[in-house]
Amino acid sequence: MSRILVVEDEPNLAQALGEYLSELGYVVEVVAHGEQAVKRATAAPPDLIVMDLMMPHLNGGEAARMLRQHAHTASIPIIAISALGNADELASVLPIDALLHKPFDLDELGEAVTTRVPPRFETPATAQPGEA
Image (cartoon, rainbow, N blue to C red; front, top):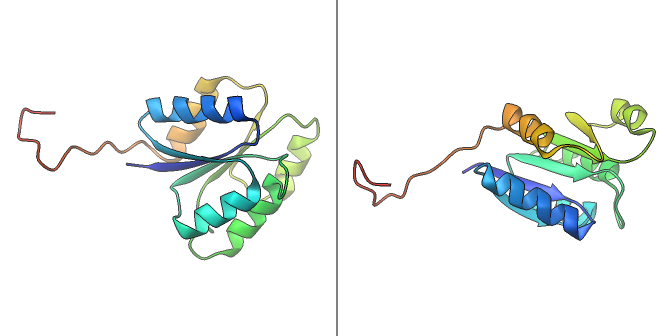
């Protein structure tokens, strides 16, 4: 299955994003800040990252720059999310693939994610034809 790393410091939003993406068919891991994101992504590279720009410890922009410097994570699509008024200006100089402005509709996130990484559903190895 396709794996997504969600990086969001606001617990309720992080949970909502994780649940929504799981419902779309993705395996989702959630971390709270950029430092954790870099560690998790370099240890087990996901297929896509959804990351807030403003977070404690290491912000999303710096985390994105660090991820682009690692061979295993350099090509992972990054969708940034932000409530900053100047987010469009920041996005133009950050190594991200897309920007969603908070508040955003979950369907908007779903479209941004599925166009970059379609969910891959796996069937159990023991399933017989006609079973699921």
